[in-house]
Image (cartoon, rainbow, N blue to C red):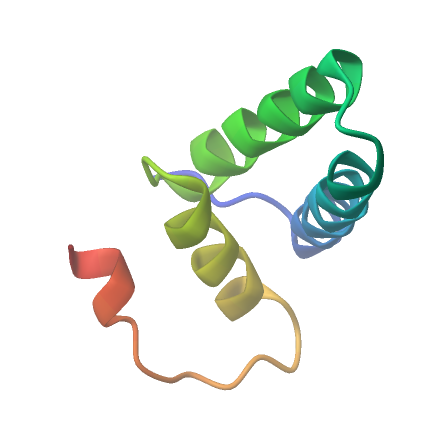
Amino acid sequence: MLMAHPAVLKNLVERYETLRALHAEQGTAETRQRMDDVAYTLCVSTGTRDIDAALVAARNQLPGARTGDDSVLAA
């Protein structure tokens, strides 16, 4: 499997978290669509099927990440 560059993953995680906070505040359809687009890209980039697993996988691939429990990814 191809691995996304850590800088790309970092950017995607930051964008997703920003959009999630923005969506919580505003709740607009545009923000939700942008958040869904980033979530999809994160899933594709990490080889996962849901955003929670994608965030765990992306964070584990970032420099300085501690290797820990990846049981979320096995589900």
